[in-house]
Amino acid sequence: MLGRLKLLLAAAAVAMIAAPTLTHAQEGGRFRVIIPNFDPQQNADRGFGRDVAEELRDLINTLPTHVAMERREIQDQAENFNMRMDDLNCLYTIQLAAQINVPVAVCASYTEDAQRNMTLNASIRDIAGSSEFALEPFTVARNQREDAARQIFTQFDRFNTQVRSAAICNDYAASQQWENALRNCDESLAINPNANSVRFLRGRVLYEMERFDEALQEFDTVLEQDPFHEDALQLAGYINTTQGNAEAGREYYGRYLEINPGNVAIRMRIAYEMASAGDPVGAMEFIQVGLDVDANSVDLLDQYGGFAFSAAAQAQDRCLIENSQLQGVCPEAGEFYREAISAYMKVFEARGAETEPDRLRNIVAAYIQLGDLPSAIELSERVLETHPAEDRIWTLYADALQRSGRLEDAIAALDRLLEIQPDHPTASLRQGQWLIQAKRIEDALPVLTRVAQQGEQQADQAARLFFNEGYTNGHQQNDYAHSIRAMTAAKQLPNVSASMRNQLNFWHGFSLFQGAVAEQEAQTLAGAQATLPKFRQAIELFNQSGSYPASVNVNMAQLLENTNQFIEIQDAIIRRGR
Image (cartoon, rainbow, N blue to C red; front, side, top):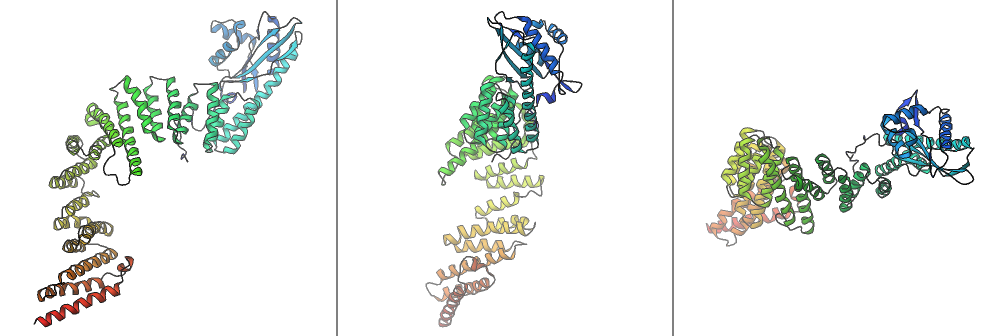
């Protein structure tokens, strides 16, 4: 599903088409129609065309909805544009109608045979919708001027029906009643299959109904009639891109840009739509064309950098799917990160302190992703001179320092951040985590105590850092002393929840138990004296672990029995030794 993402189309989102006879010039509430003298071909009688046109004007004037321009007015308007009325063929009439804001034109040409019969080719033109309602050619005798006019007038009524259906389709579409809209569009197109504006509207309705293949067929039909229909090109490009056919999407967008190849704003808008639809690489290509013309355009560089970051993330996700054991950045993603850095650094050089902070954060993050820690540190220090309050830059800076082995500098950077923002949600937690990773359990305790003082949730989060260290690098490595150090530190934190404390008590006790079991194997007096208190403390801790052991499938009764047996053995050794 496309999530109803609305494109930045030239037309308003609600009024997908403008029904021509509802939105243009009127006269006394009736819509104006221009009917020039019909155009004689091959030396046909010119008077016939003048008379039929005049008859048709009279018939149109009987309608409650339309009024024909008078012959004299047409002649005056033509003269305003340096034309004679007899020069008004169909093409010139359409151009004149557009200039004087008349929404409908009726034009015809005709030939005359040896028997003085006239064969007429007439059409009704929707000026606003740029569509033609073509009539079937028909033949009348030269003296049947009224009959000729009547036949065209009858077709004009069908044209009105078609326009009304189109308008109803538009109204239903505006209110998102898609089924009703589609039915009325179909009725309109059944009368006039060449109504391009209606066909585009039908395609847009199908798009909203998520019938994407059918929508694309309609847009292709629109483009057959009008290869430069901007909305059809743009929406076809968008649908193809979101449906995974990026190559076709780029082709449609490319044709769209051919209309305004030098317009940077349009190029940027199209590229943004492509990236939003899931094709940041295609968006980069479109921006690159603009950069080939103007390599120093800061706006284009800014967009290019953003698309390159999106492309890097997309490429990295693909790499992880192909290789879940991947460590670091894969080559394809790395290349996009370097492209992003290059573009954004040029933006930074141009805008300086006015550069948007998120761009600067992205550059530092990209350096870290690429493992270029010196560049990440150097840029962070430059940025913090002009953006000292940017907390994300401080955290990235500290991260780069820590990864470089400069732990004290990393801790100091986060201390500076805490001076600026004392309530920063993760700075102290990050410091504690780094200290724990460095096996500096005692140094981490006061830092994480500050975190735990904020409440139970934060306390459990801090305690979990100690637990993870104790379990992973202590218990699982048979370094029970390290496990006990970590679990003991965690239990000194304030506000730790009962469930977390039960977990810590169990693993503290179990580490004591496991260590004591190994220590007493020689069954010496010194060993018994050293381990007996540990077994007894383990019993106490097991009894303070609540229901936690059951959650990890530990048979607590058996464990307590085993521990008590070891206590009896150590007691016996001590008594015998005395």
